[in-house]
Image (cartoon, rainbow, N blue to C red; front, side, top):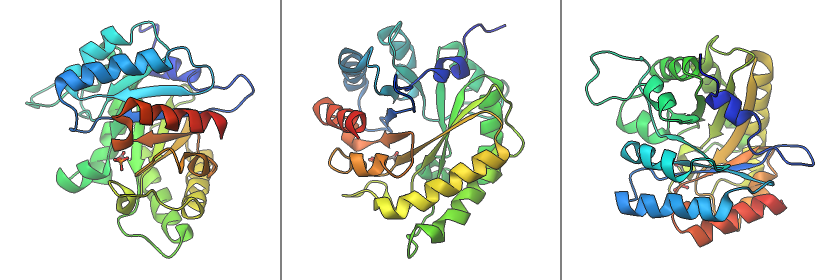
Length: 265
Ligand code: PGA
């Protein structure tokens, strides 16, 4: 029996002494080299280990996960992967199983990112299988959802996004399980600016309502898509538990400004 799981590590993650939950995650996509990733992980530990007001998690490329385990050992930071297969073993050349990730000390796994849906044909059905596989290994899925086209306002996207959450979760949850839903409107990823907070807020409310109705475990929500420090306070005020950062996390001074902005929001 596993004594520690992603679920148990995530239980206390980002909890503020005064109540509520605040965390900021960063994924390297395929931007950083191996050497850059090692320096980035060491820098994250140096800057954020032991921070009581904001939890920080990191999602490096697969081959750096063993280094993440070593560099972040005993720290308050969590780490995980950017993808996983649904199955735990079998003839799936080039794939990585959630059980393998859990064995490496990963707490989290990002699933269904917009780039994977668009470039690697991941459907809601495929993602539902991956979510179920991750949960079986005690990994916290970071389920990425978001609409392709900007609608007139967030209310126009809310039903679609809540439907994506429903499709991916099925009846997979248990009371011990934990989940992060990452709302990442596709049109706002990789841009100069994030989606407007007034657009985001009704979508977050719809995800929250969907989780309340169907998800029995710990359910948290983050926003991602061109997050930077100037918008971070307003983005955090949309009702999320945290923010999810791509490009703006690779420079650690910049990333620290985002974490600080969330701490002060
Ligand atoms: P970005 O990436 O911050 O570079 O837009 C966000 C994401 O895809 O998670």
